[in-house]
Amino acid sequence: MTLITSIGKRLFSLIWQRFLEADNMIRIKSFTFSPIQENTYILYDDIGECVIIDPGCYDDSERQALASFIEENKLKPVRLLNTHCHLDHIFGNGFVSEKYNLKPEFNKHDLPVFHAFAATCNLYGLSCDPSPEAESYLDEGDVVKFGESSLEIVFTPGHSPGSITFYNKDDKFMISGDVLFYGSVGRTDLPGGSMETLVNSIKTKLFPLGDDFKVYSGHGPSTTIGFEKKNNPFLQ
Ligand SMILES: [Zn+2]
Image (cartoon, rainbow, N blue to C red; front, side, top):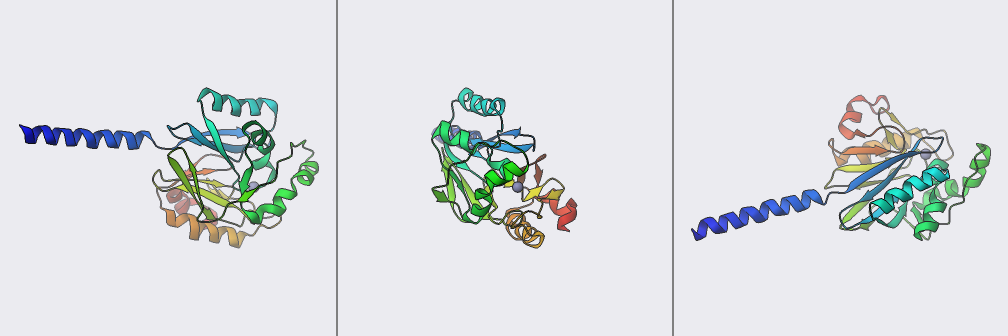
């Protein structure tokens, strides 16, 4: 009897632990913002802290949509992260920085891109809210923590000189910015871009993470590494 009770207890605790682990997966909310249709991501877990990646909110209604989601889900933004600093990925940096008292964090090699923000906005005839400067920078091997979760970083240049990809091994996903898209890759004709570097980044940094990794891109639908390995014409 005691044996059965103890097996029962053990089983219950195993199942409960599984339940807790499964339940504490990172949740990913995506928005598609601005005339450039950029994907903005909010990542959070049960603890209620969140990170905002590439806030591309461009006008008041988009800023409101982002803030409402955070408020309705009682989230506390703890980091503002940029995969890279092209204008459409930092449109909302100013708003997020001010509202949540955060400074943007990105890779140092994208500083020239970051500093071209105002000029690029003028070029496209867009009115842009300036972004505050970063106070610290992200590099390969860094770990970003929020709640009980964390994201690791790989350096994936080519689309821009300082593009980085955030990933989580347990939940098997990555936020790839404009490095890798469903059936395509990021453009490489902007300053600091290189197709050779980009393809090399994808093959040496993203492919090894595993075929079952889900890819959340900066534009368009999500995909997987396995699908892109097989079908992406730029990566054959
Ligand atoms: Zn870009």
